[in-house]
Image (cartoon, rainbow, N blue to C red; front, top):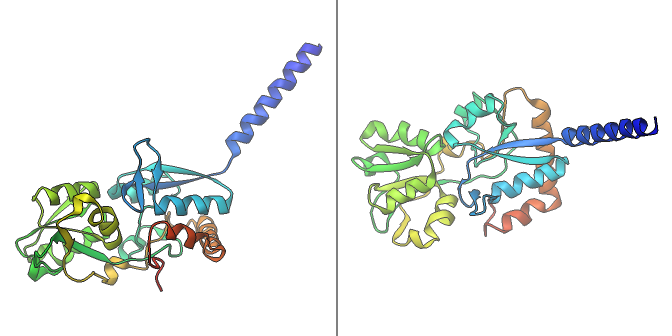
Amino acid sequence: MLRLNMLFASTLLGLSIAASVQADPELKFGVDPSYPPFEVKEPDGSLSGFDIDLGNAICAELKVHCVWVEQPFDGMIPALKAKKFDAILSAFTSTEVRRKQVDFSNRLYSGPSALIAKENSGLLPSAESLKGKTIGVMQGSSQEAFAKAEWAPHGVNILSYQSQDQVYIDLIGGRLDAGFQPAVQGDIGFLQKPQGKGFAFAGDLVTDKRLTGDGVAIGIRKGDEPLQEKLNTAIASIRASGSYNKIAGKYFNFDIYGN
């Protein structure tokens, strides 16, 4: 009888531990780790970058376990709707087009876009200047949508790629005349690196509202107000505590949050 009682108690303890582990709250973020310095996959398989640090800080504030689910950028919204993860945290700009499909948290940061080409190319981010040229963009990005709407109808060839690194590879190889991407990502992720030698921003930065939207934010499923409220509270908390500025200081020497 004693052995049976001990076995019963042991079983209950095991079930209790399993239930406790299973009940550990998680927050799953969809991310495409091909966009340094915002998100990048390290050689050991771990993820790093500004968005990753922000997400981990938000999860710590909410006292939940952060889970990162890798997803190609152009499939982010369908994967979110299919409940593959709870939210999108991957340099995801809150634009009017996207707000028709998903809801957003308050702003995480903002930033313009830029054209990158060979130094002294003379190119400008306009349909007139780029007519007959081939421009690389990332699939599913706001830059892709803008370029296809504003430039493609005027004789500009727009090529879409699954990752930003592929854009740079073809730019270096001469298969593209220019790449169009967020300015910060292009500067830190390419121009400041050895492979970016001989390239530069072409023309002025592009600050069109259709690109910048309401800034970069966390995308969530339509109607998920409880999660939206929690995320907004956490974002406000890390801003107020100074954690946000500490994280941003690791990557940027300017105020990326914006006005």
